[in-house]
Image (cartoon, rainbow over all chains, first blue to last red; front, side, top):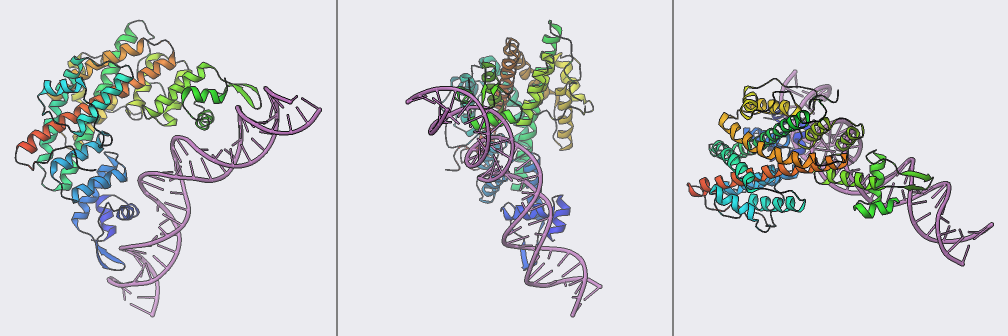
Length: 216
Length: 216
DNA sequence: ACCTCTAAGATAGAGGCACTATCCAACCAT
DNA sequence: ATGGTTGGATAGTGCCTCTATCTTAGAGGT
């Protein structure tokens, strides 16, 4: 198929597709001659992946390029998933491994998770240190509760991804799943906060304005 | 004090402060005359708030402006907090209230949260619908587990904010707290995912590369 | 009083990102 | 042959968050 058809199949404009080609996100089509190139359904799949990473997971072009490079480099799935996670969940730059925190170590023990240094663990350590620096206390009971909850999700999520055969599908499922689950948690947290605020501020002496409508 | 001193006290460059003044985030100092203005410690506080919202919570200038307008408008704390939450946790535009979902309703009942329409609840409903559209299943048991965990955090977080007297302090505590807690959850989720992946992919037949190092 | 130095305010520019529009030569269908 | 479409290259757009420059006026020292 030609660029235009590719565009119609995926919903990306031809101009955007050209841009992705320039940026090396999408491999060039088989060049028939100077003004004609042929694209396959591999291109369709790849473009759908790019679109999801860009507009569902909200990754930048640079981040997407990094993921695709790894995917095409044929690295093991575990390495690839670790990278996708780092980018989708914004765990920060890998290089620097933070010092261990007692809190994170305790969580690993409590949940019986493997005691290995992952990007995620480094990010957690860094974050706990940062919260401490900001004077935000983290009771262990809270971490226990939290880790129990996320432990449940993680299994689900992984089950979905391991079912995928194609690498593009694997990344798509993993990235979208990670993003949506993390956003779900965020929204539940928001609702919990709002509920508590309504109960304690509206009930306990504050003004009686409800939380919802405040701006047309 | 003058702009330069304000700059030194807060760490923002004079140029940035001028920019914030132009954008209406920082109220103008008391103008002594054409080339001299006096700033107070209210300005210091406000600038620290702006800095935190910008560089800790990663809000845009536009979002910060919205929060400060409300704060200076003297709206009730509950309304203000609802708005801060919407922006910090990216709950999306308010206006549109999504249709209710059985899942969200069940969560509200399970946790005994007040059954009112908040921005957070709308966002949760929208998100659940979106996940369903993407074919991601959400067992009720998972939502139960999650909401139990976030329920624990929400109390903590609120306790810290209600202690604040000054509105700028309230917003600062609330925004930073919301952001850091939500990021904490994210990082725990990441660690849970990584742990599961390591256990199932490394142990269960996949290649044996560890999750950590893959890029210099 | 005079000269210099600095601050305030206004305006313009910079740099990054993700596109988007314009050109041009080539080539397929008619 | 010829008009319209395509691929590829290059340049421009719009937004955002600063940052640099310019002008003018008052402050401080002598």
